[in-house]
Each structure stands twice: as C-alpha cells, then as structure tokens.
Amino acid sequence: MNEIYLDHAATTNMSKEALQAMLPYLFEEFGNPSGKYSLGRRAQKGLEQARVQIADTLNCQPENIIFTSGGTESDNMAVNTAVHKKKSGHLLCSAIEHPAMKNMLRFLKEKGFDVEFIPCDENGIVTPEEVKKMLKPDTIFVSVMAANNEIGTIQPIREIAMICRERNIYFHTDAVQAYGHIKLDASEIPIDMLSASAHKFGGPKGIGFLYVSNHIECVPMLFGGGQEGGMRSGTENVASIVGMGKAAEVSCKSMEKNSIYEQSLRDYMIERIENEIPYARLNGSKTRRLSNNINMSFSYVEGKSLVSMLDMVGICCSGGSACSTHKKAPSEVLTAIGLSEQLANSAIRMTLSAHNTMDEMNYTLYHLKNSIKILRERNPAYQRFIYYNRRR
Ligand code: PLP
Picture 1 (tube, rainbow, N blue to C red):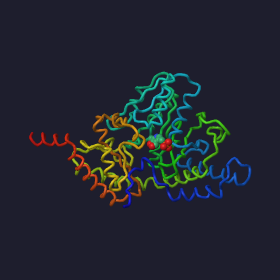
Picture 2: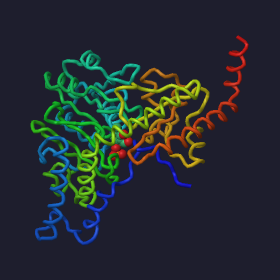
Picture 3: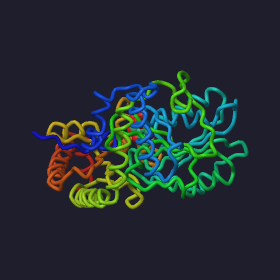
Picture 4: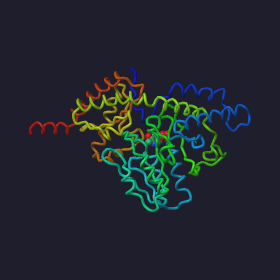
C-alpha cells in the first residue's frame, strides 16, 4: 500500500534538486569552510551561494541571513537578541505562536520579564488593533507568526511590523510555515527578524536561518570559533545549508503555481467534508489561510482515534500539530480561537503539497467518512445526541 502523505506542515520530503545539490558536499567536497586551502574555499563558496539564494527570495542582502539549526533556534535567537542587556521589560507574542516562541518567553517570565500573549479572534487572526492595545511604554519585543502551523491562518504582519517600527520595538515573525508558501519581501515589510526552517520547504531537517535586518545587532547564543560572523559558532553543516539554499530557490520559484493547485485540492476537500459529513467544522479563517491547510473538528469523534484509523488505511495526517502530540492538554491554538476542550480534541490537520493528487483526496474522503461513522457509532454520547434529536 502506498502511503498518502498529508502532513506537510510537520515536515516535507526533500526536493530532488536539493538532494542533488547536497550530494557532492557529503562526499568529495567535504572540506571545512574555515580551511585555508581550495577544498575549504569550495565549501565556503557553497555556503555563500546558499546565502545568496535565500537572500534573493526575501529581497534582502546575503549579509542579512544567519544559518541556524532550524526554526526553534532561530526563534530563540530572535528573542535573545531583543532582551540582551535587559533585566526586565515587556515581551509580547501571539497566543497562537509555536512553543519555540511561547516557551522561550515563559522561560524569560521566570527570570522577571513581563510576558503577555496577544489573543487572536475567532478566525485565528491576530489583529493590529489588538497588538496596539497590548503595547506598554516598556514593550521591547513583539513576535507574531506569518502563518500558523495548526490552522494555517495568515497574519497581517505588515501592519503589525509598522506599528512596532514606529515605536522602536523589535518585531520578529516566525515564518517557518509561511516561507515558500506566501511572498515575504523584507524590503517592503519592516521586519527586524524572521525565522525559517528548511525541512518545511523541501530542504533537509536540522537546518534553518534567521533573517536579521541591517539596523539590528544580532546577539549570538553559541560561542566558539566565530563562524557566521561570530553570530553562530560551530562548524557549518555545509551540505544541509547548500540543500536549504536550493530548496529555497525551487520552492519560491514554484510558489504561485503550487499554491493554485494546492488550493484547488484544499477547497474541494473542505466543500465535500462540509456537505457530506455532519457536525464538521473548519477551524480558522476560510480565506486568510495557507493554500495547503485543512484543520477540521468532528463532533463526537476523538481526533487521536481518527488519526489512528486513517493511519491503518495508509493516510498520514495529524491531530493538532506534530509538536503537540506529546501533550495531553488540548491545542492552545484551537482553544485560543474559542473551541471547547471537546471540539479541540476532535480536530485533525491535513496539510497538502503539490505532490498530492485528486485520487488521493477522494480516497481520503472515503476513509474519513467511514472512520467518522464507525467512531460515532461507538460513542454513547453521540448515540444519546441522535436519540434526543430524533424525538424532538
Ligand atoms: N515555528 C513553527 C511555526 C513551526 O511550525 C515549527 C515546527 O513545526 C517550528 C517553529 C520549529 O521548527 P524546527 O522544527 O525547525 O525547530
């Protein structure tokens, strides 16, 4: 049985182009970029080419890009840059940020910083008005993600960035889910720092970058041999960086075409689910949404059980986000948009790519309907609900 992969927000398969670009650097071009001989210089050239490839996609200079180990490190580094030299102050991020941001801020709260989470509306949007309302005279840092990892909602980061720039507040955006899906132009949006992670856009795992604008003095978290201009010490992961550069180029070039295709699959799925499965609900805005994201709650169904049943027929999707699968508590994102614990726990997320086909959608719909029917039949609360509804 071929597996149907519908969990591209958790990770993507590597693009062939990225793999091809990496291979030489894993074998014959194995030099340390710090080496003062041709082999080292060639590795260094590979790094710099990747930096240019990424900078081109964001319309910034290569010097604005610092290579990191991924989204988590980039998010942590952005916060660290903002709070460096401070012992207190007000830090804000949205209530629907990834744990890489929220948990870093919770850590700083224990150290004495004033930390608050900006609520979103019922559509999963963080409005500029809400951000403005929450600012204090001592606000140092604001982080609002470009697109959410669970419900795919696209945030008005340009307006929020402008509010922060006017007040000289650091503005960071976590673009881990948005990069390669929506256009991000650092020359048009006054972003101070932006995080991305290669494995979300067809690159290898364990590598990412932080964009840092010219007027920001980035602060390192790792100290050592002074690589990345002293901002991120440690011998560079050359092959992965080269793979990330190629994946960035490929994914941004095909972004528009892929988005149109993914959106057609997404909308087909949502429409059929809404028409054919009773008591289903789309979580998050229908319009301000990543082209590949479907997140729906099915009343009287446990999301976890549904994911397991779909797995048995070869469909890979997730309940909430991959990062929250170790937690028992309901998704913080779904409760932030106002879902009850029950509805939040009945959600599943399917995230598509241009590799998915209409046949896969139809196969998934068939098994989704079947599995939901079986799970509801086994649920006494659903049986009671149907019984009383019939009598009324
Ligand atoms: N931020 C967001 C929005 C994410 O979705 C993820 C991963 O799922 C991360 C950060 C963490 O990225 P990484 O796994 O590369 O550390």
